Length: 335
Ligand code: AHM
Ligand code: MG
Image 1 (cartoon, rainbow, N blue to C red):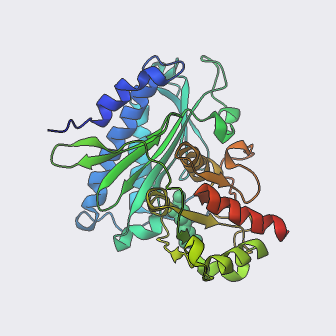
Image 2: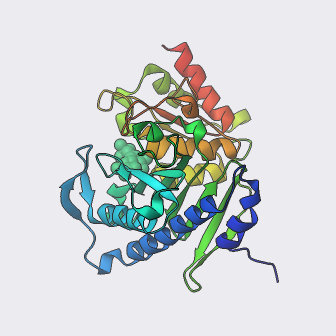
Image 3: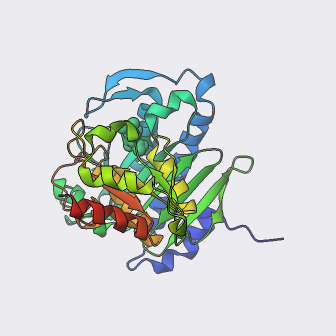
């Protein structure tokens, strides 16, 4: 029988690849795995347990918080706080970052940034949602207070990033800078098993994912690119197929496995795009590059952008290298 490696075994076996591993990053990934199981269980029975719907609050960006958003945020924060590997966390759902300054955190080297439940407009209608996480080493010295600079690091400083997709099955996908691997949750056993080893974008893709309802607001380069993908050209498989769920994790996961491009450009209703650099774009960009793809804001590599504020938004072009480069060509030619 084929040997099925659990996520726990995989994390430990690959610990030697971390340049300064002492086991803390492995323990941190295990904490995320645990919180993911709790959130997964809640999502699976959401319709039964009166946790669908709005929580009655708005988050810092003025968006309605769904009850599951709030629950997922609390589960991840409490799970990570109860263990000693991180000294601070920033979440899309919180106005400011949280410092963990209890004794058990005093030697912690890592901070986490996360979107605890991405695609939340899809929760109440039973469509896939996800959790996105991003891990950095702190810049401040242990013993000093964690500060904003620790959270405003460029994406290329990430030591690990990943997502959990709560879809037809629940899959945890992550990278520590040594390729991308995916683990499917077996609910009967309660463990994640390696199911998608060494994920790479296929060489060519034929899927484009963009909210075309915003077309009128898009920059000319994006408008022309969309028209181009819809033209007939048998040689490169155009017209491409349009697929868009409104859950970044779902659209990203599909495009990485099947080949595609995801676009969330600027528009008059979202002058800097919608997606958040720290919680959504950077972790997805790290995964993308590790899977052989490309991720930019239309001009500049996402991982090189220097964040200036926690909830900063940036335009997002992400997917197969050749597809993103084509979209960039349209952006350059239509400035
Ligand atoms: P959220 O973090 O509030 O759920 O918002 C992010 C989501 C992404 O998952 C998705 O790709 C995008 O917003 C969809 O936006 P739109 O509905 O404008 O197309
Ligand atoms: Mg989100």
